[in-house]
Image (cartoon, rainbow, N blue to C red; front, side):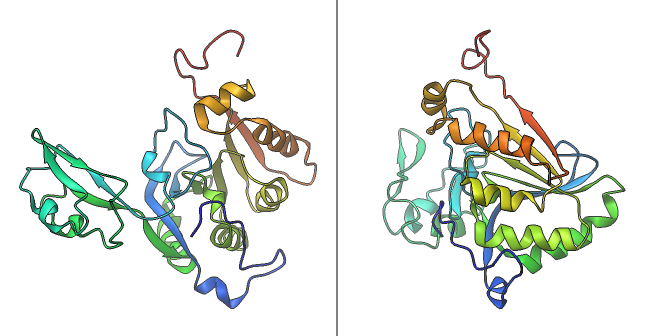
Length: 257
């Protein structure tokens, strides 16, 4: 899966049999979340993001494939992962276990994870079908109450177009309240098409200056602000949009910004 491939297996008016084969990459599912939308919610964190914020709070969600995460707290420096790595990506340098990310994951199997008996190395990211996630939602539904539902976060949840579009539609058909946490840095037509299945939108405004925004996130903010304006002007959409500004001291907390 390519991170910005917007090719879809579905049309706007329906879904084909191919949706059963499409999988989405999820790096975390949190039940009973109370900070990601109204009420109690099931939060699904999708992998892949068009931004590379210098303060990213979920860096494990930047990738469009499962990745290995290392915990130095749990690592006992036994060397099992060093011996297991077929590409020599793992080494012990001055007592510090070091991973060469330019070599890591070339094996595709992450053998260093299998070799670790102490959960010092774990895989972040798992593939789900739409039906598998819907079963998770039905399991959690009884705990949502009248105001809860599902929140798709990330990363950028809308990047996995062929997976998320039919899933959003299925949630709508199942009377599930849907919230998304989005960068809004997406093609306008696709962004607005996806929004028709969403009840509540959280969207960040990282910085108002386009060039400073590019320095901090890797992209300027023109598309983001334009999509937020499209949301505000969409009379046909009855949802709620909540712009959020993550205040980063010394970065975007000036009076001018």
